[in-house]
Length: 635
Image (cartoon, one colour):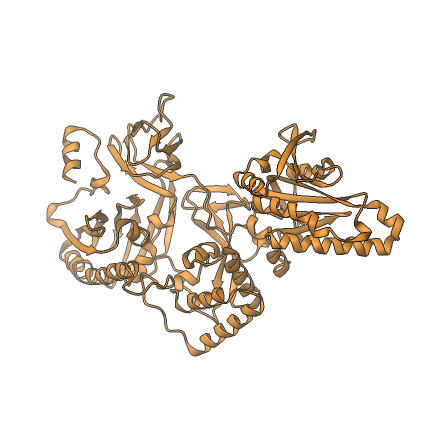
């Protein structure tokens, strides 16, 4: 911080160490608290927990807070909170949090009611040579008179100090294995005591999971989680994130959660995610409740819903199994936006240098009031380590869009007359969300929840889906040779075999069309694997030995709607996919370039020792004038 003050005196850009800036006040009204802990865990280990201000505030014993937002044309979105403390009604404006990932976070609260004028809280993580961390929690309060000073000394200096000591040391003990090595152990709170009746209901459901074919280890760990996890976590269960945390197979945890919702142990819900902050802006109980647009009050944004990015499946423990906590204890902290590596408030005329340690990947610099965004990459081979940006006009063409990994400086100059919030965000999509696109492409979801469909006539965007379409070459001859009834029975048996193969690869049969099928997958490599195995799945019947299965695989955006009481796909991607099998003359698999270009598909081709040949294609809506025909040895 001393270096930052020296920079300030010289007129050079300061670091984030002087942020949040303290508002002016009478020095006699300023109360200071500086708390320090020597912890064994590293800053990298501590950060996800110390930055989770929502969980932290609950663990500290603070009450849930109702927040409201207002939009100001000059200042943007303003957040306000209120609570009762020390027998008084307290309300305040919560300014945006400021942080640099893994290092520090801080927030300014300006009070409209209560014993304080304002409060600034700053947490800093300083690495030690032995791998541990010095955690410093500094609080600055401008009080109102003797009552305010007394409240500050009692509530912050004494009570909060003891609570922080307990919580920070528990987090450290959990991370360093002193509480055991079970990932179910909560770093913030001891496990709840489950009433006997609830434990019995939970055990009965766990017994049914085994009957559904769920792996015994998954059954055991799901039981531990639902019994021991805090009320906040069982209120919003994200199965892919949970599987990663517990070290379990993702498909098994997803299946367990879906069976749990069907059996009444869990509730299936839908989170609507803002595309900017990625925070849930609304929770709905059924797809029928979706509208074509969502609304994020925190970003003052109306956004178009997209099954692949803005609608996520979550689960909640049933009230008969567990109590859940839906209250909000803090809003806007770093844990709410884990894709944001840094966020800072830059005042009018201020110069600030962000010292970052971004890893290799793609990023975006943006802000809610900035007239520009900057997309850039961090690479080990890049030369540039420093940017200088003027926030009124953004970067020029000479600014390199590549920064060197291992440490970067982004110097910001706010040459406007108002405060601006600047963020550095990762642009890679989250891979721990069970999106509506992914769920609707699962056969188990369609089987267990056939009523989860959109309202009649409603269309929702889907950023990307991989479709597998099949037909049988010369299938019409079957009806002439065998008669309608026998031919239909044979075709129906073929559909059953195809469906079994699709399920094994994680896809869902969407519909049958004449003698073919349309199936959906969330990942192109799974769709391609299934396409390769569909032909062998039908082999062996004498009556169909002369028939050849033709398969097309295509990937792209689509629209989702309800047709014949189930979710279906529409649009150019569907039309293109439907025409691809015709190009597989004599049977085989044809894929579009969007599928062939996927690196995992290329790896699968190589591992199975397959080749592909390019054949011309003239299909309306197909970006290229060619497709790839997969050649197996012996073709």
